[in-house]
Amino acid sequence: MKQPLKQRPRSGQGDDYHHISEDDEHLKDFEEYKIVRILLDTHTIYWYTTGDPQLSAMAQAAIQDTTNEVLISPASLWEIVIIR
Image (tube, rainbow, N blue to C red; front, side):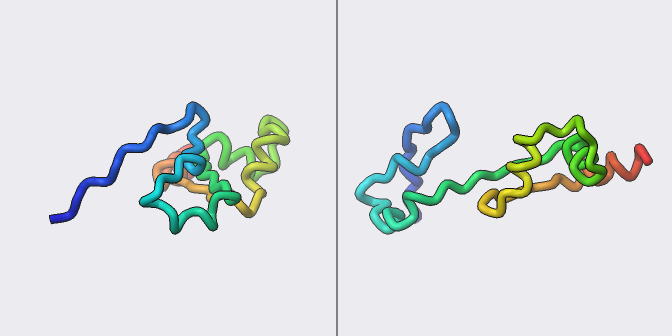
């Protein structure tokens, strides 16, 4: 029977990489990498793809940062199709 994963304390910033226990020693090589997952909402997708100035420079930079994982919900794409 598989044992449940240990719960580790999470920081207030969503950064869970600095909590590496002895069991996670194999993750030590990845400590310097910060993977950020960004889920874009409908407005953000629309503003980004149309070059709308309502999208902040910080948001645009986060989307374009190749170290980030940008996620788009199928529901957002559906909303854009319905609106158009």
